[in-house]
Image (tube, rainbow, N blue to C red; front, side, top):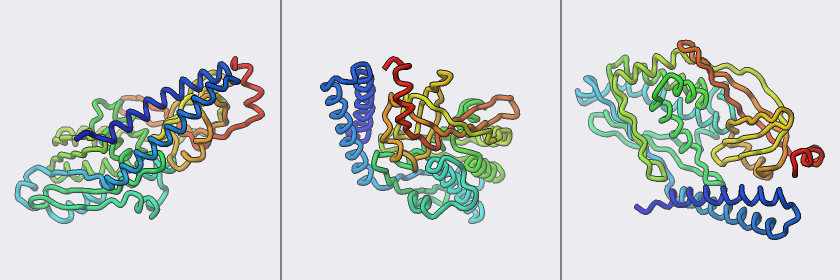
Length: 326
């Protein structure tokens, strides 16, 4: 199929590059009318493509994940109800917790709010032979920029499953958070305890097929590694600097005006509309939370930065821009 999602996503990437170039050009010649006009035209064009991408994703409506169980218990043609219930509970718990984290910037402290449950609308859409094949569905529900919470949640879940090393797995846990990781760990242990293997697959809106073949060895290996990974919240900080990147999928870069250090990380989707008024190349005050994820077995530590808010300070902008050669 001639995939419209892939085409629009590539267009958005291309236009974003052109916008970055146009902003750099305008920064060098701030009074150039043609540079201002070109930048404004590109920004309008980007909004049009994002609106079209959102429309196409609304037409797609739902994402479907296939979860196939294998093993002696599955070969009998029927899986005990309590085993299925545990698998469904831990899988949905992981996805819901991750979606909340992507939305808010931190793990849920109690039950998942109805707002998140409604947004994802995660359901058991069907079952295959002898209850050994489950079909899970969720609503795509894109925001104004074409970003989908369930799409991002599924991508990050597959990254955990497909981690190639303890370091990769630790990096993934730093993204999905301890609550989602804990649910995944319980899911894997449920499979292992019942001598079950799993094949999980999902075709995303860009027609990329995500697959994981969970053999008994892989399931046990990931579960054992997850047992050694711990997440801690270290501190918060305020950074004043130049915004280097703001991506619709919640990624940011800001370069400190104090020490020239560049901070890279993620921001919660809930603040995306608030920070879209701030452009790359502008100076802003960033409130950042620092998290540390540690693998106790290897000693490897992953430091992560979460942007909780970003605000322009016009007075400081005027004072610092000449120092930056603008």
